[in-house]
Image (cartoon, rainbow, N blue to C red; front, side, top):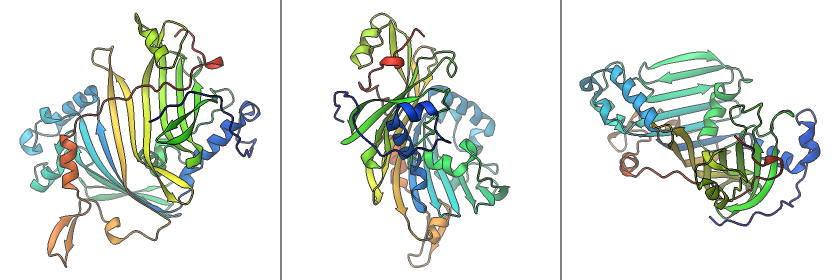
Length: 391
């Protein structure tokens, strides 16, 4: 990835102002931010119809793994489970399928590798007992805009619930999952007028694409424990405002010599502080799925957790890859609507096979090394009212 020297942002975008939505300070002071936010926030609504399949790989922190081992001990004895809790590792693998029309949507997940255990093999051998393994190995959720139907394999039962189109955040099952798959990484970028505001702080080149770098600093009202929290976002306007990188940074008191390291990273704090990466999302392999609309095909999302010693950082790393995305297509095929992993009787080939099963991909995943966390990129110097204060 080529890195360009940060330069003042001089681009000019078309601005359409909706005063009922905007905070007055943002509309008056930085119209470029409003244009960028509008471009990012419209992404989820662009594809009215799509069918997608995504593979998610997760490498969990040691503390989370310890919790999972403790929970696995309560699911049953190793003979009934098919594995001992000590066999669990830090990795999990999930296949996801999403299908949507303007009035319907359907989401399916299959977890063939749970914390390093090949659950698919256990299910084939019947080694998980009558109660299942204690987690959702195979789930399916669908809605017609009036009701939500949820199905899990361990009970083989459909539960109907009312569907409220006004639900947001974690309760909006479809939009939450779509965002998590990396198809449209977005957030509500704009805050209330009293909240922290975004500003353009530079430009950069990622994956060969021109990006505008925008930044937001926390305040004592939003982060009383440490207002030196920063959000830094790389947006590619020429690629339908796709977000190619998203960083969370905090400044903490530096130990001897570490303030020099922060300056070397392009973040001159001016005080005895060091920059610490707490979250980073990186997207690559952009593809034009409909004319003028680009989707990242691969993403890496990482979040830092305190290590067991309380000083070092432990990382939750999630890798996503789009295996298939068809926009504007007709209704999904019969196999697309069948549960991934379900047994399919193929009359012509005279064989039984699990739908969507990728044995070679699972074996490759179990053998690959854990990825190393990314570092802060030397871009977008903290200046002006975004300059740090003592934590």
